[in-house]
Image (cartoon, rainbow, N blue to C red; front, side):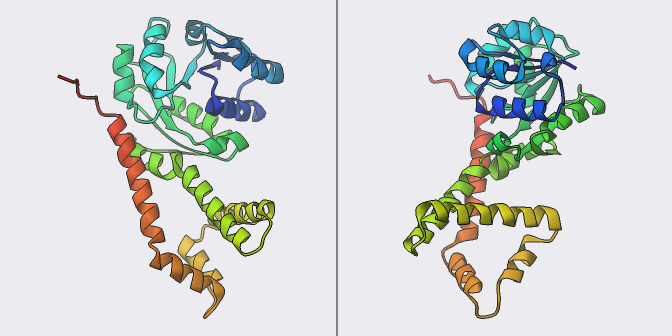
Length: 272
C-alpha cells in the first residue's frame, strides 16, 4: 500500500509521525506533497519519506490519498488532481464541513471517499477520530483507513449524519479542555501554587481522570460520586459548578460547534 498526503500542516505531520512509528507503512511507501519544499524537508530528513512539490505526482502514485489542506483550498486542489486519480483509489478528507457528496461532486466521478474528523492530540499519539465512508468503499478498504487512524490514537466508525456531533465533542473538544486546565491552574495560582506546578496538577488530573473513564469502563457519574465524600470538599465544589451552569455551558458549546460545522457544509447563497 502506498499512502499519499497532499498538504503538510500540523495535523498531517502528527498523522505521518504516528503512521511511521507504528509501521503502518514503510517510509518508501509514503509520499507527501506541498508547494513549499522546506515544510516537507524536516519530515524527509527525520523519516526518509518521499516528498514532492507536485500534488499531481502524489495523487497519481498513492493508493490512498489524504487531502490534508484547509477546507477553502479543497476546490482548488481537487480541480488540480481530479484527472490524475482513478475510481479505484481512496480519497480521505479531514476538512470540517465538507461532506462526502460535496467532495465527490468536485471530482466529477464516483470516487471512493472516507471522511474523517481527527483532532490535535494526534500530535502526542492520543488523537480521537471519527470516520465514515461512501458506498463505493469496501469493508476491507474502510478497515484499512480505520487502522491508519488508530496508529495515533483512537478511531471510531460512524455514519455521516453523526459527523457534526463528532466535531462538537472531539474535533473542537481539545479547546474546551485547554480552557478548563487554564481555569483550574489560575485558581491554583490564586490559592498559592506556583504557575508551572499549577498547570502540572491541573493537566495531570484531567489526563488521569480521562484514563479512568476509558480503562475502567465505569460511568463518569459513578466515578464522580466515588470522589464526593459526604460533607466534603469535592461535593462542595461540584455544587458550585452546578450552580454556575457548568454542564449547561459545556452542552451549549458542543451544540454550537456542531451547528457551525453543519452550516459550513451548506452551499453559500449568492449575493444579488
